[in-house]
Image (cartoon, rainbow, N blue to C red; front, side, top):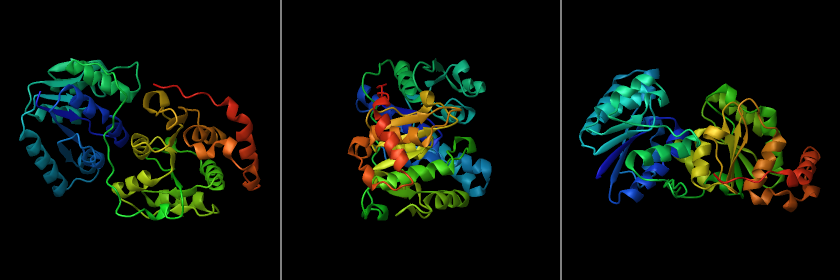
Length: 356
């Protein structure tokens, strides 16, 4: 096996958590070259993985929303790049029409894809010469690793290795110049994934009283307004300017803690080893959550949003400086004193984090 193409087009969190597939393939096929096909909106992290030889990307989402000659030309160029190389095998771990078309257009006689009953769009089955089962007993991330292993004849016997190295900023980001900070990813593309603003404000107060500067990124003007509302009255809180994906990633890389909803950038934080607490309100942590003992934890569930106290306890399990036993209650403001005392008395009830 000399060259393999992996097809996982979107979304950012899915692409990030599929990265261990690259290290698995290198481990079992020494010397293999691995290319990856994805939407341009998710391509940044692929360039940060040294195990990937070529990144094939096109603005598929952008063209669908805003068709243009430039976007079409980029798509045509990516198809030419795709067909410029003959692959020994192509494996589609996405399973919809757009990923199937990419697989079909490649110059490979061996095209792996999920069985029709496991596909996101059943008609995508036309593109594959070999079928694999989607592993349902695992979460989505481990399931992809297991499925690829079964396709190529190896078993998964090691922890996930993401291989993502965020390019270092030339200097410390401004938020880091005055001490440790926590990034709060309050924004999400789906309204039902949001956590209430008043909960974010209570959490921000608690983090600030615990010695962490609160930093709030945003992507749209509405999200900026929400960030300003959360930051209002929080000592030292920073609402960031609009940043690129790379700039946000560099902030993540220097953060002491990341807390956010089920979004791709929170998945990135966990993948690069930053203490991360992910809040679930409308999606299932069993399927797409994080669970790295002492480093990444999911809290809440589909239809069962967590309370601020639940999130505080989750943070305490991954970020030691906020452990109640090291918390100076006398320094807590009157607004958050009750929260801190509750956390102290409840710590013995925090369930142990179970490894996957």
